[in-house]
Image (cartoon, rainbow, N blue to C red):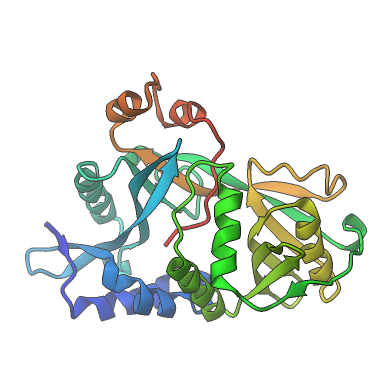
Length: 305
């Protein structure tokens, strides 16, 4: 069996497998991803002696900040094996060989797993979870919607993002063009952007996904708590429930003391070279968990593609 990059004509085959295998998590995202991002990513294939696809995954990179330094970080997404080739160890071999390759280029690799701990045998640790607050009208004060808009200003959103993320580690660098791409991605999934304009400009924005009974807030970036509350209050005027997803470090229990909250695993992280990590950050971490504790600020990120 051979590890190689996908042939040009295989990309369409992989696209169709994604549409079938990941249909439950699609919502328009796969079409946008293959059109916008795949040309700049690496599609790896494990092939048999006849050069037929046995298993595949996609690797893309982001520039992420840790303790003030920027690192090229690899993300693994869309790992799959066609049904007729499953339970033969192909995915294990594929992931092992790709990680060996990435270990020579990237200090960090991340993967989003649908089940916690599934990638632990490969050195991934479920280090990043999100708080999910389940909010309804009794949990949130009614605030004025003055300044709230559904228009998306990529430049202003990028500025708010930079001011917000300076309190965290692990966030991805976003240019104005990156933000435009994210806006396009949200809209491709039938999502919307809601934001708050204050006297000194944009003070918050959120990526929201409406459903019949509720609205998901999948990313919310804000400069003050009032702006966050304005967004939630405005949304609750049209639906009975809002699912607010924030980082584990954002303890909003003082804002929503009686709201149900659950911790949801989100992304697993692998440090590809712990010795290099320790030398760079001048720490003595024994594993990825203690390595992240050694960092100065908590983790925040939403990127998985």
